[in-house]
Image 1 (cartoon, one colour):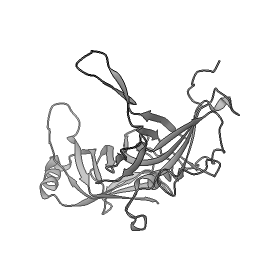
Image 2 (cartoon, rainbow, N blue to C red):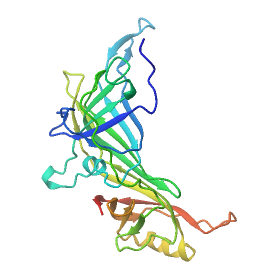
Image 3 (cartoon, helix red, strand yellow):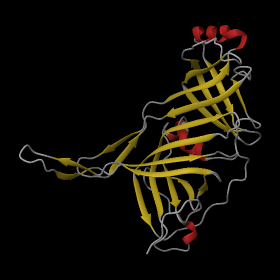
Image 4 (cartoon, helix red, strand yellow):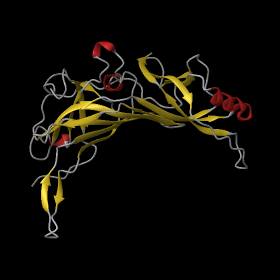
Length: 299
């Protein structure tokens, strides 16, 4: 009898595909994600619905399209490459398109070398729909990625081997990093958290004669976020900045040398609420903003 699916026995690697859904032979050398993956979730949308007529309360099953998704959460390290490979699409040489990715996800790896107690998921045609980057005081940064997926194939025999682990430091909010504007100035005297969601507007398309996904096409790009900042000089300066609606960049450096740096370009503060109350402590706000574009570097 096969065993239960067990925690803390996972392995994952990724590949950049040459074309949508083409995959790459998983025996080829893959790329590491992080030594601290916290969640990897393969999803399949409803595969049937019930069709009824007025002559009976009983229904008939109607099969629906195969619509896979993949959710991945991990703590980034210095040297991370997945965010750039999956998220950045502003390069004209790529036709301003997203890369499509493949993931090789293994469960119950302690059951190796193979057998019915182990499942591998070969996830192909993955395009990044959205990514949330977040952290706060005394916490690590977390990337939460949601992919649209063309195909998922399962097997009990593992193929290939894991790439070497990333060796870079874990990225954490209070260690070596900074959150500044494009001129190198701090956003405020105190910044206690940040959360940014980048959405690529990816939509799935199916043909009339197949249950399988045919395309995943990028749409409009949107980046929204908020940061918990002190309202310096009693809040008047921030209110003036919101009213002025001038563009500025937010540069999120996730760590020291060699660590990711995400630049949110042409940001504007969206609104403000300045609350002076009896709670104690300084005046602060979770200030929302929007951005027009992003760029990424390891510096």
